[in-house]
Length: 407
Image (cartoon, rainbow, N blue to C red; front, side, top):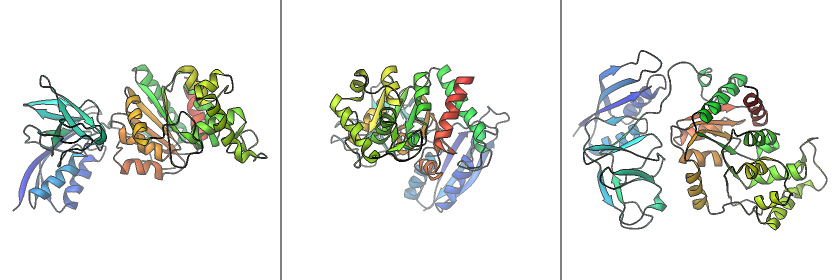
């Protein structure tokens, strides 16, 4: 028996193609729609709104479709209070739990809408307190027996990502990851976003891969840390190791950072660096001892910029600062993203995706990589806010640091 539900979506839904995506999803699911009302914003700051009826084959099909539509900010207009169920085991969500997006989310409890404090994708929603209730996203492993968890999509609504109307540098070539976009304009745009974040009291997060060092971008990132443009750093063992190697031994993966040629015995340089830092006890101890005298990690220690080095099964050593427990690393990342307004992801696929998974959609994210597939993977995993800049990362971060200094 066919069922009908009325949905609404509002925001900059035309410019961002959200409305088109929502309608396509309905048809792809084998359902149908009827537009009830459409109001288009008249200025660049005015939101648009659409109301439409969806007809699906049965209740199960409608529930599955509603989950897909909510990812894009489309919500049922008839909604009661959220259904809650108590978790019965630590680290296990109740059956039928609502799986979150990273969009701004609200939950209706006792007739009132409560804003979710920390939007994050692929988590559960836990409600606590009564007057007023608080709602937070909780990753599965952090759920505790007795937590009141939201079940199903009833009483949950999300807001479409805010995409201002008007042409921006990232729409110039129509594709989000076009390699033909003007890089100078992209650099100035990113610099403006970084300045605005600092002006507004928000923090800037840098997520760096080893290629930042290999391509000569390490000194530029170090300058941005030293001058207060970067307040948080996420990376892995490789980035930190080669950053230290380039500053202590003048090589990166054994290749001279000055001459660009392999050095005799250089293939073992990174191991010798890791070994010496382990001898000191930590990166901070090696800085205090005067063994590390420059580089990104040096500037982070000197400026007390917090950093998280997430481990990998292929790491050499690793450095003593590396968090080898991936669950603990992700939890530490969640602690450090509080107050972040802009994220710069440079030449790293796995760390970029891991960071994108925990960032709210409101955090403007720029993914700089020579490989357009990196930002595509971010978008495929739900990071709606990711802007892709396809270019050599070393040149880009150098130009960005210079642009921030000059204006």
